[in-house]
Image (cartoon, rainbow, N blue to C red; front, side, top):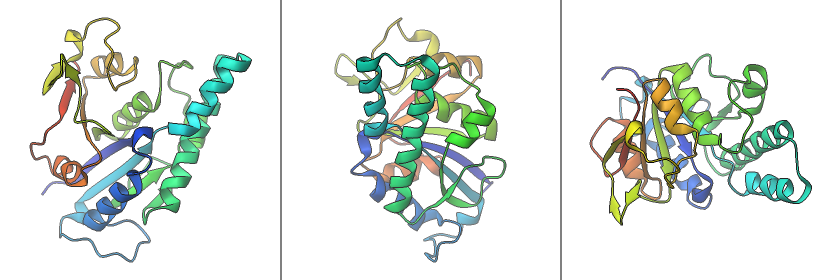
Length: 223
């Protein structure tokens, strides 16, 4: 098995289920400074970085913005701090180690604390169109990783039917889905793919890490 790098964005919709998902990943692939012995011999070749969503923490910033009219910069960094809080929650409720760097992805499962990294790099527009989805895509681009978005549904739907594969160029303008408005353009510009799948089913996420076919939506840019 070749070395595998995977970015898993865990959405705020999974806040109740996310500790179970992270711990299942740690059981399968291990984590630095963790005494748990992984279930398989491939763990030393798999690096998984969890990018937390904003969830209820970013929602509090949205409410503050609606009430008090925050500037774009303030809202952006406050929302990033919301991701940081979700990272604290995930680390508290799981056996995964935390990191604030993407220079070297350690083997096993790590949780990204994104504020310092994003404050230093500041790579994306300050807008509510840019959420943790696009931030995770940027991290995947920087690290050459597969991008998985774990959410509370099986993928993207059209007229009640799951879309198994769709190119960003095929997405209608203002198409409502479980991804943020900026993600399709980012995927298109950087020739990337994002797998959207149900994080309530940890085994499905694990199979996707191994590169096996799973029930999901594959959103493809210019690839």
